Length: 248
Image (cartoon, rainbow, N blue to C red; front, side, top):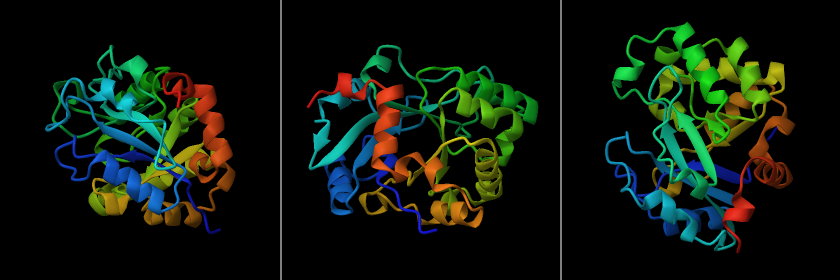
């Protein structure tokens, strides 16, 4: 099908101390690759080496359009427990354009002894959170959930399901579940977003592995939100405050 994306909406700057490029370097890479938009989504506080307490509130100091690229001020939040609570500071929420909710296997007390039903309830609770935009790389077999129950609810609650290209190199055990999630999204007409999860500037926009999987399952291009500038703008206008928070 030859899918392409016009935005990379999950990247990490050196403020996440296991990533190694500045915001300027990430945006420059996006501009050089002709991307329309880039989200800076550093890790929230539970992740070791996460940014300091003023980082997320200050992100909106970056111009909305920088080097010709729409810069989306975001965060990758950690799901803390089976009730779907996240580690985003309340005072930061109104200042952010974009919230990704992800599970990272950090040995959290609230996520001990997972099973499919617990994880299904977890994601159903996250789906109800009106501030969450993206369900991040949710294919971990340790935290597998009932895709047939949950994916339609993601769609009903306007959550974008991420197909994360970084998974194919660092979380290979997740790939088969990523395929199942993509098939469930196709079946239920739930939009996805395809991201690099770049931790260095050269990976910005590198989503080849994720797009290959979508091609293999004959995924509808019209359900890939960041394959179209118009679709992405429509989503941002309907489900975020970016154009109010970040006048240029």
